[in-house]
Length: 120
Image (cartoon, rainbow, N blue to C red; front, side, top):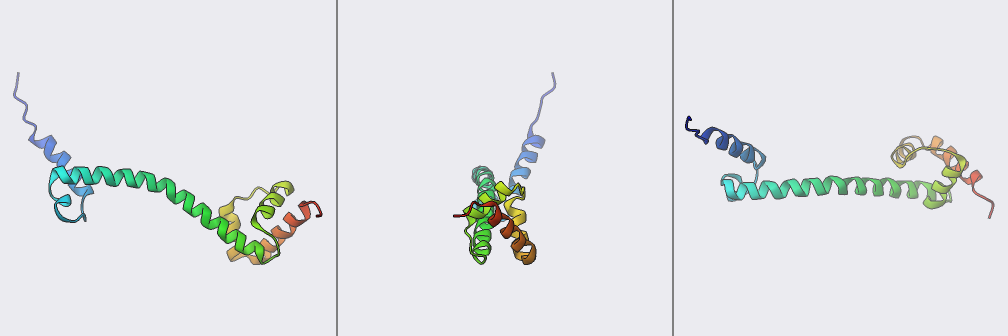
């Protein structure tokens, strides 16, 4: 049986890690042991923060909607409830975009939500 030398595969693996560690500070970018640990941790943070980014962006849309709806004398929760009761199925991302770029259309949506609410 032929002897298997593993220099090529380990070099390729190391190259992959070093490419991911590019821009890191100190030994974290050029020593395989520390670079591998740093890259693994960076990947964990990246995975976690992709989830957190979705939360943050949704919160931003909600804050924008709340501010826009308050200009029309309503609060966010009543606005969303009114839209649901009126059967308007538009997500918060699009609502936020409409509030910023098309105030007239947004005002119409607010009126629709107000009319769907029971008179208090």
